[in-house]
Image (cartoon, rainbow, N blue to C red; front, side, top):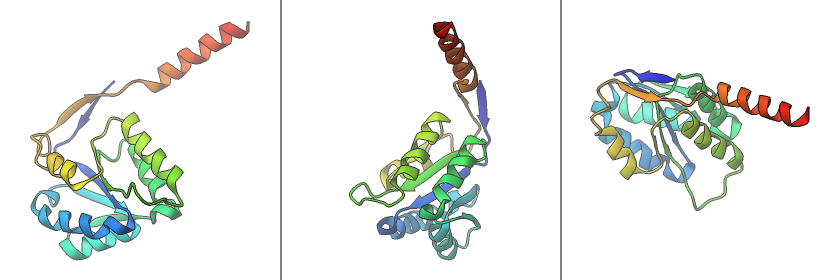
Length: 156
């Protein structure tokens, strides 16, 4: 199944506590590119980015209060095209299962994900940032139905 990512991207911005300042600085540095796109993110991160850049950032709940799950749902619904998620790999998070689920769903729906500033720099300067991008999604519904049929036959 082919999906078209439009020229104006819908970008989720997320950062763990120790990396919020780094993401805010990255957004300030890339404000001219980011202002061309629709921005959203989790709780405090959204507010900090909006205050520092003056850009509108739709805020979901804080990550530990369900914000990661809200963003994951938007990815699954095709409402987020890419994610910049500065996560702290050295500190345990109380909502770690939600974080893993968010990263997994981003891979399932084949969206670009940056987990640090170097990767975010590569994404923001990509030729695809200002153009449509066509990518193929695996048809998981058909795959699930095929697996169910196989299992059904095994039990008959």
